[in-house]
Amino acid sequence: MSIGILHKYGDYIDLGGATPISMGEGDTPLLYSEYLSEKTGASIYLKVEGCNPSGSFKDRGMVVAVSKALQKNKKVLVCASTGNTSASASAYAAKFGLISAIIVPNGNIAKGKLAQAMAFGAKIIAVDGSFDDALNIVRKLENESSIEIVNSINPYRIEGQKTAAFEIIDSLSSIDYLCIPVGNAGNISAYWKGFKEYANLKNFKLPKMLGFQAEGAAPIVKGKIINNPDTLATAIRIGNPASWKSAELAISESNGSIHSVTDNEIIKSYVNLARRDGIYCEPASAAGVAGIIKLSKEIDISGKNITCVVTGNGLKDPVNSEKFASTNIHEVKSELNEVLKAINKKD
Ligand code: AN7
Image 1: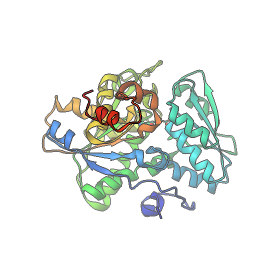
Image 2: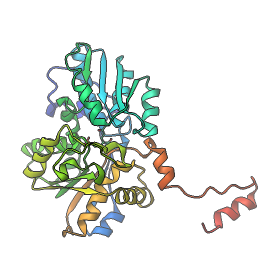
Image 3: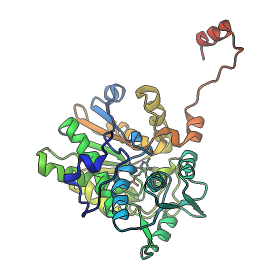
Image 4: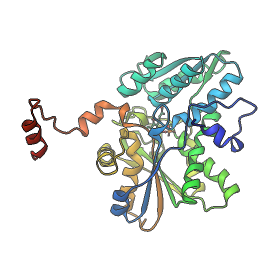
C-alpha cells in the first residue's frame, strides 16, 4: 500500500498532534535526462511531480493542510487557484468527507483541472478577475469558523511540499542546482526549507535555487506587482505572489537567482520533454527546464548535478497539447494494407 509523505517523513514534519492521512503522495520518479544532459553538459534529473495522486506537487502540501483541517473539525476547504491547488483540494475533500469550494479566474484555468474539480464534486466559483483577485477574496475568509484556507498561505502546505527536497537528497545525496517554476512562490520556498532542514540531519552541501517565471507574469524578476499577468502557462499566471518574500530569501540565502522565460521557450521545452524524455507535463511545468537551457548558454554548468522540478501532469491541459504538440492523424480504411501504408508513410 502507498504510504504517503506523512508516514514516510512524519518525523520531520510538524503536524502538531494531527492524525496523519494519505492518498499516496510523494515518492515520485526522479529521472536522468540523457537529452538535456547531452545538450547542456550537466547531469540533469527530472523530478516528475505529475505522478502525485491528483497530478501535481500540490498533493504533498494538501495532505498536511487537510490533516490539520480534520483535527480542527473544519468542514469546508477553500482555495484560490490557477487550477492545480483546486484539483488537489477537491480530491482530498472527496476522500475525507469535506466540502471544497474553489475560487478560480474565469476562463484562465486549464480544462483538465476544471474537469478534475468537477469530477470530485467541488463547488466551483469562477470570478471575473485574476488569480491574485481570487486570493485577495480568500484571505478575507480567514475568520469563517467552518472554513480552512488551503492555499500556500497556510503554512502546513509548505511543510508538506518540502518533502520533495528530502526525496531528491535521498536519491542523489546532493545537487548543485534546483530549477523550479515560480508562480505564487510557495514551492521554491518549500524546497529551500526542506533542503535546509535535511542538511542538518544528512550533512550535504546546499544547492543553489534557480527560479523561473513566465515573462508576462514575472513580478519577482521585475521587482514589481504585475496587474495583468499574461502567459499561456496559466498555472503560473500570477502577478503578486503570496510567498514573494520567502522566495527572495531562498534565492539570496542559497546564492541562487530568478529569471524569466518566454512562452516560446516554455513551449519548446514542453514539447521536448514529451518527445525526448517521454514526460508529458503541462506548459508551466516546463519552465524550469526552459530556464536551465537558457542559463546554460550564459553560465558554465558543465559537470554540475541539476534537478529540474516538473510540477504537473500534461493531461491537465489538453488544449495547449493539441495546439503545440499534436501530430497527424492518418484516417484509413480498416484494412491491413492501408494501415501498413500509413505506418511507412513519411509525415
Ligand atoms: C504546474 O494551483 O498556484 O510557485 O493555484 O500548478 O508554488 O505557486 C499553481 C502553481 C508551478 C507554481 N507549476 O508553484 C494553483 C497554483 C504548476 C503549478 C506552479 C503551479 P508556486
